[in-house]
Image (cartoon, rainbow over all chains, first blue to last red; front, side):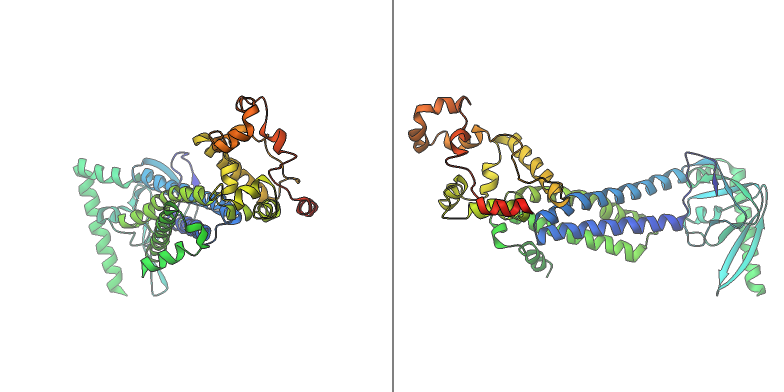
Length: 193
Length: 224
């Protein structure tokens, strides 16, 4: 995925999760080094507790703070561009929802996986949007979206998307109608199997 | 159960480290903080596994990665400062400090260190008391020097024989001896010279009555 905005760096939810796990493991090691110092106070344990432990804790704090800032900026972003290569995943089912995507060019497919089988439930093209349902329901993503071709999107953060919905009635009506159609589409696909 | 565990962990060290009530209390608080920190981080790892959909997941992250490590670090600094004053701590860098501590504890030695130790002229933390200047600045200086020495030891970047960074200052003797009647009686003729720094304590006590003596040990450690 090519980042075209230097300010808003995308970090997918899975990678962000791994970074947070790594940060917490670093903090665990730092705590254990501190405990080692208390149990056996020598120059060696002091050396580790005074040098390695703070370094690990600072790295963990920086990583976590960086992710928090990234998340916050993403939620408050307003139309920054993101591009995806063909086959690249935009977001996965279960990811946290921070923004909606407006397709500028290319195609995206909405995929659901059930019982190990993947089903394409919709293909979206230029002028359409996706990712709004999770923002409205305040729940994790309920499907995976992948770029079917090279995909260019404009991304709106959750806070700005919801503000737009509140302020512009026509947008609210349009989104509500789209959500209704998509839910009906999903229900139809589900019952036809 | 938690209190028992905490007390056991805090007291796991040699009993001589636990004399000071400040140190004892700090150890127990630190153990508690660390155990709580470990519990919070483990819970966050197991429950959320890096996911952040809920506000509670961020609350645990803030606590486990932010607040608790910072507070633990601050309390830990107090404990480090307390424990780094003990003779046993100095001795843990045994390749360089063992001969000094051996001499200190040698009742047959006539060095100043041994005399002060065996008569308990300095009741505790004998290395620290002599090698720290007066006041907060002296304490900060000693701590900084100690940290640097610890790093040098464990990175094996120290040089033998061990030498003082600067000549031993009169004020480090006088902070205890200046008001002593016994000292004034013995040094009366030239005490003004000592007070004004015209004459150094080590002019006499460097050779004839040295601070430390360790002829055989020094040879061994220099070889190492």
